[in-house]
Length: 388
Image (cartoon, rainbow, N blue to C red; front, side, top):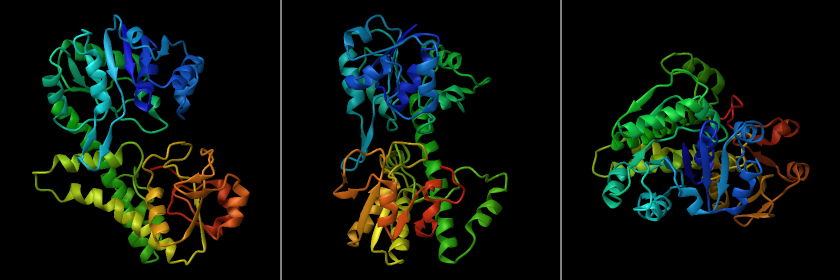
C-alpha cells in the first residue's frame, strides 16, 4: 500500500519507519532539513532503533515537502502533526491537524488515521467539519527515545473505529511489529481518546506519588531507596515509574494531564486536579531544598528530561530554574545540545570541567557518571539511575 505520513516528529517518524518495512511510505513535512536527513537515511531525533532502521534496513521510505506527490494515489494518510496545550483556551492547539484536513478535504478518498494526541470529543467534531473524509483516531503510546521500539513491541493497538479500513490498518501495524500476539482493541473515537489521556495521566499520577513519597523521606532523613524497594516489591504496585525526579515533563504528560483536567470542567474531581497541581508543588519543593543550602552559584546539569535524550520540552528542571531565578540566585547551565551561550537569559557553559569548577552546587534531575568526581556538590533525587 501507499501510505502518507504527515509530520515527521517522534510519532510520525516511528510510524513511517515501521510501515515502510512492508509498504511504500511518503513522509511529508514542511521542514526541508528534516526531509533531507531522512532521504539520506539519517534521523533528526535521538532514537537508536530509528537510526539503525534508517541506515541498515530495506525501507521503502521517501520524505518530501511536496504535498501533491505525497497525497497522490495514497491508500492511507497518517496525521502525526504536533498538538500542545494552550493555557489560555485550556484546550489542545489542534490547528496543525486541521490545516492538513483543510488541504485534503474533498481531494482525497482514502481513510485518514489521526495519530496526534487530541482532546476527548475532538474526533466527532472533525467528522462534522470534514464530512467527505473518513477519519479514524488511533492513539500512540511511545516513549521519548524509544518511539520505534515501542511500535515494534507495542503494549496494545487501539483503533477508534471498528470497520474494514480500521482493521486493515491495525494489521499493517502488526505486520511491521516484532512482538507476537499484540492485543488489538476496537472502540469508538471518544473511547480511544479517553484511553490515551487516562493512560498518560495515570503515569503522571505514579510519578507524582513517588515524588511525594520522596519528599517525605528527604524531609525526615529516611533512606528513600529502602522505602521504594519495600513498597515496589508488592506485585500489585511494582517498581515501574517509581524513581524520584523533579517532576514529570516531556512531550506528553504535562499537556495530557492538563487537557484531561479541562475535559472534567463540569465533572466533580479531586484526583485529576491534584495530579496537575502536584507537579508544580514538586518543583517548588525541589527549589526550596536547593535554596536551603544557601548556594552562591547554582549549576544546572542538563535541561533534558531523560538520559541519552536531546529533548527538554517542558522538562521539570525548567520549572525549578524559574523558582531559583525568582529567589535572585545566580544560575548557570550545562547543556551540550545547546549551541548558544544563553538560555532564557541564563549563561550556558559548554565546557563540563569549567562548569563543575565554577558552581558550588550542581543540580541534576538525572545522575550521570561524569559527575562522580564532584559528587559532594551534586543535588539529585535520582535513586536508581533510570528514567522512570
